[in-house]
Length: 143
Image (tube, rainbow, N blue to C red; front, side, top):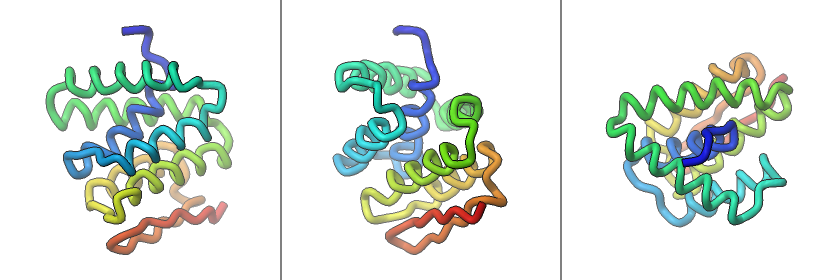
């Protein structure tokens, strides 16, 4: 495995919202993850993304249980807080997490909890409003 980077942290956060929430990653969520990484990290090539994704999935599996994976999610969000320092960029992270959460047209309570945790760690609590329905999750910037 190459050195873990903030790029890995971003992909890890996306994988967690996709998988930890409901125990599966469907094709719509995979496409949402790839597309959102392209938006957040435009200089990452398709080959580099594929390598990062494989390393992230290996680490996810190696962590072995939900508690360890959840701790890594919090650590990854902290790393992203250092990478994305403007409110605008942090808002994009939250918005992309919500996009992945709703990619399968269902918002699981664990997905909602993970997006809320991201809002808190990224210090966006007073700047973001989350609006959830059964099938979607909207993120409004209230800055």
